Image (tube, rainbow, N blue to C red; front, side, top):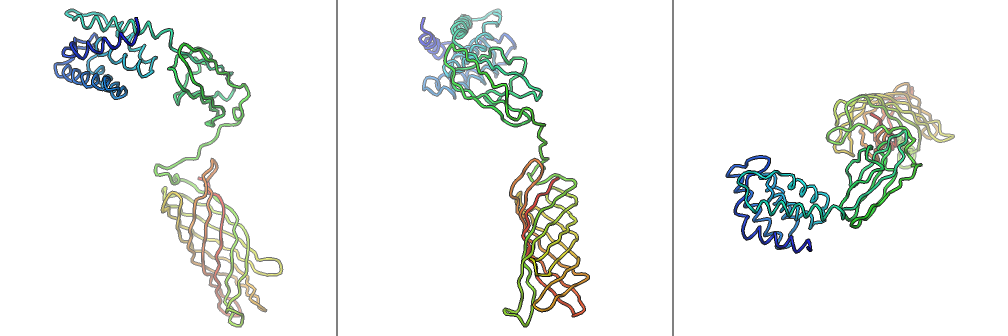
Length: 374
């Protein structure tokens, strides 16, 4: 007998007659309220099925079956899953109905549903396709996922039933995806996917995931960082054109400190820069730095630094045993890697010093690029 003709006959029978009564479950005895709820859900589901809205009908039948696990609700649920192409689930549901023991006072409608479930299971059994994943396990113990669901290693190499249609196989080593295969199964097909024995990344050491705070910023704990910097000096010189001398410099910096919270860091910051050849300018400075995370990618802070500086201004060279500077810090996160976060920052500041020629000050605007690890 044609399966869809049989299904249609049972659908009309359900909608026209036995939907008004749901027999007692083989697993539990539904309360009158539960029976009425299941009746209403079945009625709504059958109307949706008649209108071709199969997914919505499936959802109604699923709830009805959860409330009253009877041959009628089970078979109706299995039937619509078969129509949706969910053959594995439909067969399992049908077999569950078949295994339900008849109970005293059971109506003929339940017997019809049990017979329909048996026919459905027999019809689907030879049609359900299978997938075999052939994979040689390496020392890295790769993980296998089919359609996003993990596959136990014990079933690798064995036939695994699957619904007809498209599926995606993913193999991961050390949390990295090293192999992907998209396949399409047709009824009764048995497909073997042979995963290459040599997978790039499976012999690498496990990747250490950077810790994350709940809000996506940084974890509490010690902070270490460093990088390179380049900037411009602006030294006031009254007898020069524009009233100042501008020169460049380059150097490096380092940070060490503690993340008090995911949004607040207290650091000891130090750097050293030197001017170009022929320009006897240098600046070495260190001090405290307080940073606050405005967002996941933007940090703002304030530093108080002190150190030693030498600045060439035209025909004079000023050397100070000590200079200090209030500094504004603005950092932008560029990228996150396993080993840390990359930042680009700008840090405008004004250094105030004292020399034998008198007090003097100069502005310095460095641009930094570096990494901080937590």
